[in-house]
Length: 497
Ligand SMILES: [Cu+2]
Image 1 (cartoon, helix red, strand yellow):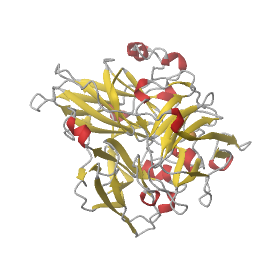
Image 2 (tube, rainbow, N blue to C red):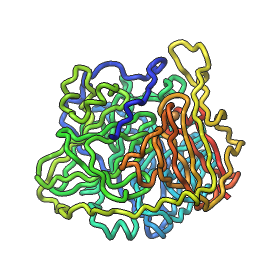
Image 3 (cartoon, rainbow, N blue to C red):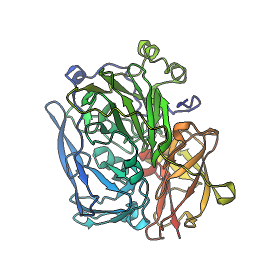
Image 4 (cartoon, rainbow, N blue to C red):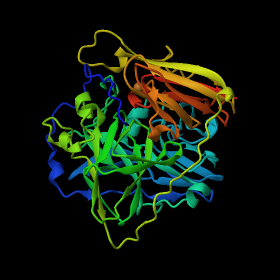
């Protein structure tokens, strides 16, 4: 059951709420374009990787150039590949006219190289973090974490994927040829104006954050197609949205296998037909195309599937026949190319060994309550000034350390909200979820994670241990990964010593 049937969403005051029904945009009748595959930059040998934070232009829509931000490219950045027990040396140059902080999301690295808002790169400056990669194989990402501007900068393009390999993942037989049978799938939603420019306003974002109307995958408007071999294909799916929760399913309702979550491989493959993903979350899945037929991955907006329809989603045909059915325009079609060498080996029964701490090892418990306070009468616009977003009653203050954590010690963190669903993200670690929204953790959420969804009914709980240090000058962050919530203050700072 990947769904929370009790999840509540806010409609009132959400000026970005998608409410135009499902008329297909004009460009949807065109031939689907090919899924772009971001350039792969291998940083495994420790050579410095130059990353230019810059402006760009991309024609997402035919004949219209959109002004963008990118990292060494017009929109998004290259996929960075690294390896456990190696050093990843990055060299960022900020050529923008505003400051930028770039966070390595999911990386277990000290606060001083974590890229939080305290590490803003001034215009024209460089930042050269040396990252000792000590964690297991995983799909991570890097993105803007600039104080008060993460949402806008990510929306315009400042994000990219990081792939970590290790000896254990090499030893098991999984599809791993980047761009062939191991595809990055970065899903985002964006709104374009009549001139093809991105539409974004933190001040006008509703309570749920900023929702785009058009799905991009790897920086191109869906629907998209990819040519893949007639075998097992691995998708490294990243929900790179500012605020949307997505639901993924194949058009033929086929079973696929989730093999990895935020922090690495699951203990064993988990069969699924639908998969919900919150902003910031990564899911690695394997789909079998051995029969040579194509498969179409559909992207639904979770907020457009109401509770009654959620009950129907296991029979997707029912959803398609609903008059107010979610859009099926947003898809990635996997077309088989028989000329490509196929990965035919069966999925391993065991992927990774995940060891949970004993109860006696839990040395401390911390509670976090996320809150959104409506500032009063603000008409149709639940704008920035009207919203008070806090964790444990405090909005993010760059000069305040909210929590002090001991290094190398297991803790239990309990997280709840007073209003709405939020993806809670913690820097510098992976954690193990013990319960989600008061319920038993679903099998696909039982691996290493750095985001957990919480709701306003019950606690989500996880156990976590920090193995690196974060000082008062360079603390870690915990925050809601709805970027408009983060930018409005739903974030705190903590040290690890
Ligand atoms: Cu939130």
